[in-house]
Image (cartoon, rainbow, N blue to C red; front, side, top):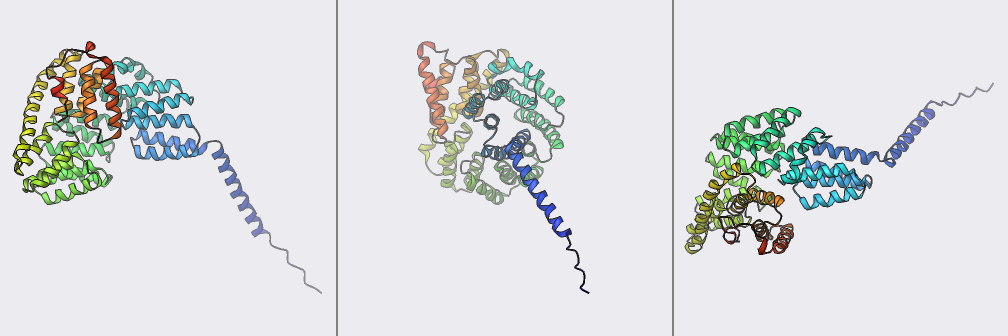
Length: 451
C-alpha cells in the first residue's frame, strides 16, 4: 500500500509572502510620503531647529537637502534669507526675501524678517518703531527679535535699551544662553571682567558646550591674568569644535602669557595654514617673531595684518616697530606719524562720545565718531555708526564718502567690497556738495583716506 504524501508545508512560503507584502507597503508608503512633501517638510523643520540652536552649518546642510528635493520653494527662499541674515550677508538676505514674497510666502513673515534685519545691522530708525508690536506678538521669532534688537542697540551704543531688552529676553527664555553671552560681552567691552566672567558662566550653565561662552570666558579670565584657567576654557572649546580658530588663537595667547612661546607658535602656525588672513594669529605671531629678533619675518606678518584694515593704530604701531627693528627707518616714520595722528583722533573720540549720550540725535557727532573708529580703531564699530547715521539721513555726504573710501581700500579682500564701494560712491556723487552736512572736527579727507 503506497504511503500517503505528506502535506507541503506552507509556513515558510506564507511568512515570505507576508514579508514581501510588508516591504512593499513600506516602500509604497515612503513613496507617498515623499510625493506628499514629507521629506522636504522634515528637512525644513530640521533647518529651523538648527537655526534655533544657532548652528548655521547644520542649517545650511539641511536646507540644501530640502532645496534638492525641489519642493516648498517659498519656505526655502525664506530660510535662505534667514541664514544669510544671521551671517551678516545683507544683499543676499534682501534678495531671498524678495524671492520668498514673489513665490507666495506669508507677507507678514517677510515684513517681520525685514524689520529684524534693520535691527540687526543697527538701523534703529526703521526698526525700533515696530519693537513693541513684535514683542507683543512674536510668533515663533521671540528669540530672533530679542537678539537682533539687542545687537542693534549695542551697535548704536544705546546700552540702556540693550540691557533692558536682555533682561526681558532672560525672563521670557530662561534656558537660552545667548542673552547671557550678550550681557557678558557688553561688560567685557566695558572692562568689567569679573562681571563678564559671571555672565559667561551663567551661559555655560545653560549650555556647557556653547562656543561663544567658552571663548568669552577664556578671554575674561585672560584679562584677569589667570592664564592657566583661560587656557583650559580655550582648549575645552577646541574639543567641542577643533575648527574654531578663535579658540586656538586664545589658547596661543594664554600660552604666551605662561611663557610657552614655542607651543604658542605651533598653534598660530596651524591657524594661519588654514586661514592666512586671521588677524589675531598674524598679530600674535608677528609679536613673537619681533621678540625673537626675526625682524623681516615680523614685518611680513604685520604688513599682511595691516592690509586687512582690522585694527587701526594698534596694528600700524606694530608694523612701525618691526620696520625700525629691521633697519627700515624711513618707512617706519610714515607709520609712526599715522599712529600719532590716530591717537590724537581717538582721544578726540573719547571726548566727543559723551555728547552722544547727552544728545543721541546728533548726526554730526555720530558721523565724526564713525569716521574716527573706521580709520583708526575698530572698523566694525565705525561701519555700524555710519550705517546708523545713514539710516536717519541717507544724504549725509561725509558718511557716504567715508564708507566709499573704506570699501574701495578693502576691495582686494572681497569682491563684495567692490560692489559696496560702487554703491556708496554713486550715492555720494548723487548728493553733491550743495547737500553736505557740517564737516566733523576730523576732516573727511584726513580721516578716511587710504594709507
